[in-house]
Image (cartoon, protein in one colour):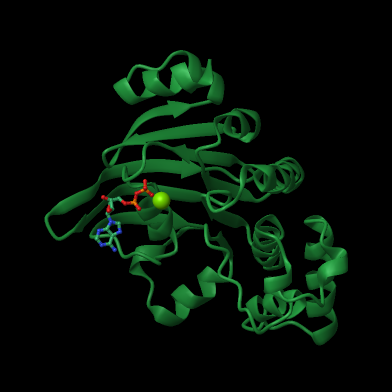
Length: 241
Ligand code: ADP
Ligand code: MG
């Protein structure tokens, strides 16, 4: 489904990604963890080129995303859902319209669009909030709208960058519950950046642990959290115990 090869990225003299390699299979949930500033967001944003890497390959469904021209890139972005830490909702639009907007570039009938918006709202348990505005929602509800927007695309790959980072602890749980049900019921590939260790342990098929622009541990959660070999991996093991 997705193969990331030899990804390098610098900001000026700051080398942020120093050769990132990993792949994601169909239906797989992959979690990227690691200390702040280690390059998690840069990695995930490079996948759909919200950030342009300096070199490498990102093969998605047989095509190298980094070699695509703008029209093709815009098309492939419709097949990759992205959920942001800060929700990125449009305040003057209702919940329904926020989700509908994401579908405008797809060639769908009006009926199909409405059906998809309603279904995605059901999936995040916000059926009754279609006509609400973002300002009337809690942070957890806003993020569930962000997730619904991504689900409505019916993309085969969904990227989430710290989806619960902006939320109060009490609201984190409702978002993680929704994400847990999505990872267990959908056959899309999901890549999540998160600091929520227990959640990562529960939902991940594989975990990538990053440190200073490199992947220093990889494998199923059991392996990563119980037999780490790296310095940072050992710190995560302590947190997990
Ligand atoms: P993480 O998501 O793991 O916290 P990031 O990928 O956001 O890490 O950032 C990695 C490093 O790159 C950090 O040192 C950060 O300050 C730096 N960085 C990120 N984005 C930019 C940018 N647009 N310009 C300059 N430096 C950046
Ligand atoms: Mg980040």
